[in-house]
Length: 554
Image (cartoon, rainbow, N blue to C red; front, side, top):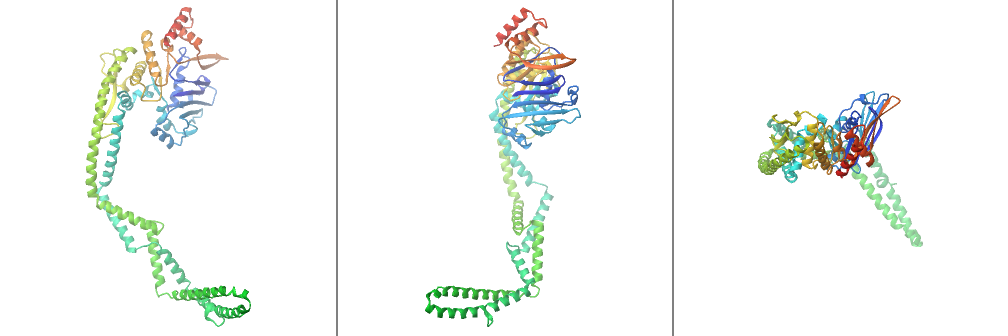
């Protein structure tokens, strides 16, 4: 729903701010007052291109801004999320900034977006009828959604979409399995080579660290031998070793302990120290014995480390990743070699999924066909009330190629406004009041259930008046009970039915023409409807007639 529209420095507008409400919002004003500028501004917020030529004379920049309330579905929310647009409390603010230099910018909730993105999401905000390619009605893809809303096929459509999702998943897996045979053979050769290469080297976790340690000792063996020999000698093997000195100290400690108990407390500590020194000396001797390296061992270590390094460069940055690659390759090899059995299983599943899809799609088609008949009958009945009683309307189905989440068929509306003329696709029917009225009828029949968008009607009352204009107004009023409607009208019968009535006025001051829009109160509405009835010279009779029309509209 459009809550607020702001326009700055566009055409005849200085600063304009309009608060729209729920229900039927009508714009009236004398011919040439600039009502179309409001619709053009809303079209720009829906993704239509806008020229810098519309910038007010003497100004360098212009801005159009709209505040919309929109309950997002998970699918539409994902579209905004992907673009980085944050939406809070279902409020969307679209702003277009124009400059005379041609640098135009578009923002949604203060996030800079592209023209293409706004075009993609703009249909969520407003559906503008009466402006050629802007009208949703000219897009045959929207016809099926409108028909489905009227035919109440939500359950059947959901079941068909789910059956299609299952079928498509199996089809995709089967297609991957049945990839080009030569590619499959190449994959087998590569997998077998890689598995053989890794298995032949025989890697294991921790080996690389062990080899690096052994290499380090081998390279420094002479220095380490001297150090370990000297350590063992100092601790245990020489006449002046630490152990000899400690034994002498231990004997003296025992003598002193016999005379003074204070020394006895240290005997255990000295014994512990002697045990530590003995263990350290033994460790030094053992380490010394490992420093004896066989001839050629260092070359073996270098060769082995080079093999491991080569595998890491090819299959991962660590031995763990190399082993993960090995396991993954084995699994893929098994999968390919067992593809025959898997292909048979998937083919059976696919056949079952096709049957399930066709079952639900057939139910959907049957309900659509029945719904289309009722929809067509209701549309034809309504056409008579909007001065299109001689028009013809048809719903035609076209079979889809292959399966679809939307079922087995497409729908397209065909229309002819004049007797004797063959019905044609709506995309080939001239725009104007006739198509706008048809759009109103379609909206009314479908109950406005298919969209939260603001329905915008321009040129809807061309060539009608009196009773027909009132009928058009009543249908606008009916539609406005389920969704917001914005309409430009020249007919008092329609204007009298407004929930919110706005007048568009032009004024000239100091040779500058300006455009303004204001919402009318009850007294002002009487005068405006009277003007629409009688012209500029409002008579008492016209004013009384306007009062009666407004009273009857309640």
